[in-house]
Length: 345
Image (cartoon, rainbow, N blue to C red; front, side, top):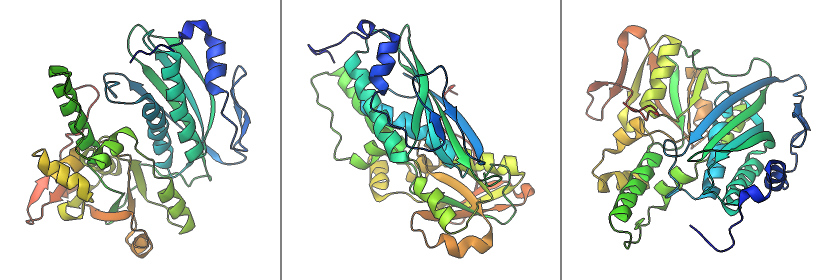
């Protein structure tokens, strides 16, 4: 959207731009010795192990600027990265962010983007310690690296689940996919008839889950407080079925999921029925929920029940038993990964 107070980015120059975009960021962590403004940042995790994850977000593949506000996009680009650090049972402490943008992006749009970044960094207690900016020929490209810390050997991998371990998830699943379905539908209507105003039909919940997801810092804090170390863990970015197959394959086990135990928010269930979709299929194959899926030993079950945000949805079984969903009617179905795939199918 054009307005009369558009500032061309070229007028600032690269260093001027970085100074401008990062001037409000204050350091939050003792481990950040030197932040933005030098050739490299310096961090010291004081005897903790360092956890590192990186993500690329590409316009037209991972997000659509037609319905994604820049502020939300900045926020989400931090959240999806700190979520990976939490998925290792670690605490995120620093991020770097690089962006490439075409000349259709104004300084005002970048300000909005970095405002979202700033809000997320503050909420999750991470320091922005560097990055790079570049022009791109078309489209916006965002690359974020997140750094975290963990007490030595308390990190949790995907490959360490045990037979009989309970499979748990945080929060609710499937809503982000439904938000995407709604936004894509409204975009199509708008492109066919630009005079029609989008009708989001009071679907705040599913739209919020798509545009402004949260990472489960609270679950990691709960584990620490209650002395729970999951046996395996990952975040739900590609859909429950895809993630549970990763856990099973890498742990060399089978699994059983119960359809009636999969947590689906009432607003998402209603939206699914309205769009003629099966809520369970949305939860299994949707993706971008950024919840945590993890396995625990059966003896930790009582501890888990203290947290209403955690659902037990199944258990790990013998490899030979395969990965199966037990339907409400008691039938067994193969779990297949039909989750979202950036490379198309």
